[in-house]
Length: 273
Image (cartoon, rainbow, N blue to C red; front, side, top):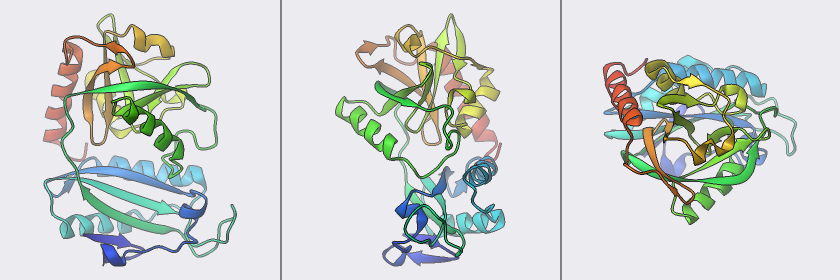
């Protein structure tokens, strides 16, 4: 494996960052995960736009998007695969211990790993912890993911692939690495970004392409929704067949099946929508 680290491609065993990188010591960093299909990234422009927004929100210098694109292209060329997870990580760089940033400038790492196509359906659980819709990092895709690690581990313990959060107002928010859509009375809804959820790239495309409504939803909507599905970079659109102890009968419901079909068709026709 070849990885881009701060300006050059390196073999995986030589791809190193300092133990004093602010992304490691205090989680001062942002990232994007991009799907690659047969050596081509999907929706890269949208991902880089969000990378820039996250950098601005965290107070990091704006990333050099020409360099990021070049790094992505070099990593993809160096690691051929049919379906991949391209990870772009941008950090506060070499800094003193503590929360203050140093003046060495930001760090950039781009890596690519193989991915497998997701199953059509999956199980999810709910967790008692909440998203803070008014926090300093709300809406930013930062490397501060320990809360998600804990929640996802609990999901795996219960035979599920994802954990869903409410926000502090008791509204449905998001998963650890996904957005959530529900069907009520045949209509498709998803929580608004104001709920505290990440403005997912796949979420945005699904809203545009299916006409889903952005709606404030109580957390217990999961107990009565006719259909539920998740969206994320590597899931695309994935139906939920179980929430905690509730089974959703029928496998992939008709609204979800239509959303899957629309997404596959539109994404297949345009790799940078």
